[in-house]
Length: 445
Ligand code: GDP
Image (cartoon, rainbow, N blue to C red; front, side, top):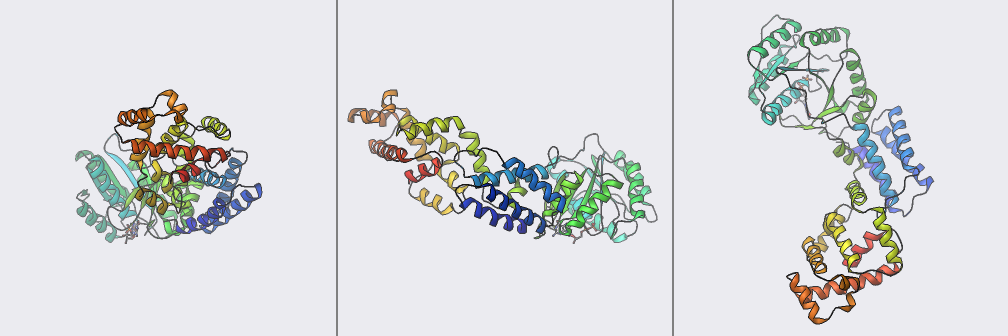
């Protein structure tokens, strides 16, 4: 899903991240392209405009986290804004089903995937939550639709309300409520009739059913491939019936995923689930983080920036940078770097997050640079005295032996660490501020 948007933005950010520093003009250009990309992905104009405005306001004047490029920082800001717009309140997949029997009203246009989604949700509640579920079709216009729900119920092993010919939608809803009460059901799904287009009769019927059924949730099912139309449908249904959430179907196709963004922005209703195929298991909780990540399609730069921010305290970085600038780099500094790398997921973790660095990570692994090595090195440093850490040149052969023994390792390994430290210390002298982690990684290879 979202391939189009992803590719477009991917291109923009690739150009951004290749540049060292980001000028205001760069930000302007990038954001203009972000806007075009959003529009091409069928995000509505006002939504795209607001989105870019919000990103710009956040990007301007924000200090760039050390150890990431300004381009990566912009990616992060765009990502966070995508997540903000896409997010609903609370967990997306937590349907309100306390006080059984809880009624869930399913609404939407014909062909949107409403009946399929009803069965998918029922299966999920049965299997994940151990709920006893009853399904009822209110589609009095189309007997085939009623039978379809009955067949699906059989397939997933839940009960469906027996079909009685000649009843109105409201009568079926009443009967279903009674049955749900008597039968001790936890959840009752009411699959309302769809129409090809929104019309008054349909809305009146759904309203009448709603008043009788008093649903805990009213879920609108919309075809994710219909783009801008989906937004209009959502606006209409919300205005007339009031919806508590949206399920976007056919997100397995390569549709213009922008609909998700506009729908959320325009209606303010959370997208709760996405349909990812025809099979009964093809339903996922809507995850804004994941969708935003996919929209950006930038490896996991966002995660990198986040981790860098969390773990690499600006103060600490500054203090270290000052030491490095003076050419100071003792074993404590090295230990701090090693701890840092471990926290960020080791060599593989750090490099795996950078687009195109997967191969380099593999090479490093083959050469024996892995987390175990980082841990061994930390153990060696830990078994040094304070004085030795501050000045490793003091180390005599006898002390080296004891340090290695203390860490349960060979002296050769300690010698390698000392050599590596020496190389890094030399290198640190040449280093300025930013780009610290990158150079450390290089020094370790
Ligand atoms: P309704 O008229 O709204 O009840 O729509 P249906 O549930 O009958 O679905 C119409 C068609 O869309 C069926 O062939 C479904 O198998 C298919 N469908 C439903 N949801 C999805 C989905 O998420 N992905 C794909 N690829 N097909 C879906």
